[in-house]
Structures are given as structure tokens and as C-alpha cells.
Length: 377
Image (tube, rainbow, N blue to C red; front, side, top):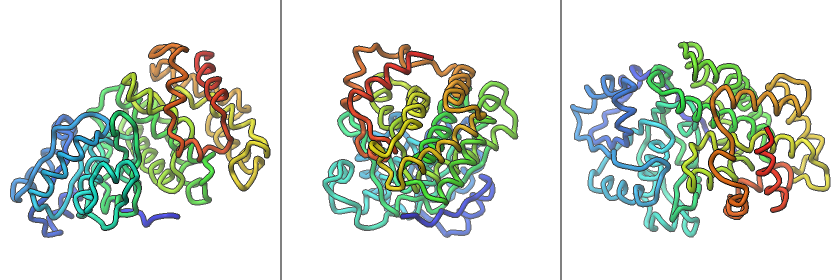
């Protein structure tokens, strides 16, 4: 199933003009305060916000937690808001999606987050303004939330923001490590979308272009940023979001969540740790272990796209090319954050929904071997 894409707004200035025309009186702002100041968004938005009965929700942890969602719902209901503005990275945008949507439901936020209940009605209109080039959350109909340390994904068509503002100038203040981590997330999303069981002709167009743009521009955007590199990474991130909005992600993301929640590894880097060994693993898919109903040959054709993006020369060369990219970004390796004795706990906490979207079936022993192979690079 695909979803109607949100209206895309190319600059924060145009977003302010749109907000002024919508006759909003009580906006609810979910703000990463540091990003609001550093990105320059504050200067653009405050003239509008100060004229309204605005409520700001700003105190939340990195990676959306249920407790922050619940506090946000309480503040949102008290505010009687008529519009939601989210500004920041994926955390701020996902929180805004959940606060808006879950405030309108009769069921408890915990029950919806854990899948015991579902979203029945849409929340208030939402404008998402990313200040990173990575998560693509402004282009997806789902949101991440951690409940008791375990990652859950809430999905519903109404979670797709009504407006998305993708303005590369808002990313210019990002430090190199955050640029690298968020950009790696965009690249990995694109790669996973290409080989995903749910891949379609439409998603392949988005994902292939996103992967190409990220591979060609991420090192420059991180280490010697130019306007062009920043613009390319914002486009890559948004296209990757549009791609996974159709396909969702796969095994690298499934394995990444424990690395983030247990060891504090930035999400994009946690995903990148296993991308190359899973590329090699998926390239060896057979009809016996293929989970894609189109068969192993169709999967290998899509993997050939990934190899081409990474410079061609076969799967082994593509993996080496990605390792070089990671090295240029000072990404580190799995051995830097945990030991082999921790691998079993990582595998045992794997997100099975994401794993089921991987085109090759993987046993527990194979996943352990993939984690071991992250050390060989």
C-alpha cells in the first residue's frame, strides 16, 4: 500500500507564509531547542509564533520514549491546539506524530505503542521541519517509540505529516558526527529499501536515487561541507524516507535498535555496522531461503543496483567501498562498543517485523555470524 505524499515546502521562509495563511490560532510546537536556535529556524518562525497562543513542548530525551509521549499528550490536550509544528531530528518529528495522533484516541498510549490497540481517528494537522538530513521522518507514515527499553513502531496513514519543510540551510549548523550519523541512516534506509521484500517500482526509484546521492555527497557534507553537498543530503534523506514509507526497513535496522538502546550508539552508525555483511549475506540468497515471492533472481537484480551505486565490481568490492565510506566518516565498528559475548543479547532482542522484510531468511546462528563478520573489515 502506498500513501499520498505530503506537500513539500522548499524553504523555511515559504513555510512561514503558509502558516500565516492557514489561520492557525493555537499551534503546539514540538521543538528540539538546540536545533531551533542553531539552525536559524527560530528567527524565521518566532514572528508567527509570538502572535499566537502557542504551547512549546521541549523537554524530551533522544530517541522517543513512551514517558515523553505521555507527557506530551497531557500538555497537548490542555493546550486545545489546532495545529502541530515539529522541528528537529527524527526524535522531535516522531514525538510530534505520536502526540498529535494518540491525543485523539480513546485507548491508552502504551496500548497503541505496543500494538494492543490501534489508531482509529486522525490527530491535528502536522508540519514537520527536519534540521538533520537523515531520518526522513517527515516523509513516512510511522513513528518510533521506546517502551521499557524496547523499540516499537506505530504505523497509520494519518501519521504522514500534512506538510514537510526540507530546507538544507537548517542543517548547516550540524556538527560532523551528527551529519555522518544521520546521513548513514539515510543511505542505509535507501539500500535496505532496494532489497526489501516490499520493494516496488516506485520505491526503487526513490531508493536508488537516495542511495546514489548519499554515497556521492555524505563524506563532503561531513568533512568539508558545501551548499551543494548539504542540499544533496537533504534530498537523499527525503527520498529515502519516501522509499521506506512504502517498503519499511530490513535486517540492519532490526539489529540496530539494541545497539542504540543498550550502548548509546547513534542510530545511523548502529545500522551501518551490519550493512556490508548483510549485503554479502543477501547477495547469496537462494530460492530455498528467499522470503520475496518474486524469487531469488529478482532479489539479486535489485542487489546489483546497490553494487552499482557503490562503484560496481561485484559484491565484495561493494562491501569494501562501503567500509571505506564508513572509515572516512570515522564511523567505528561494532567491536568499539561491545564484545562478541554481547552478540547473543543483541540477536535475541531483534525486531522481528523488520527482519521479516529482509529478502533472505536468517537463522539465529546466521545473525550471530553476521555480527561476528562486522569485526572483519
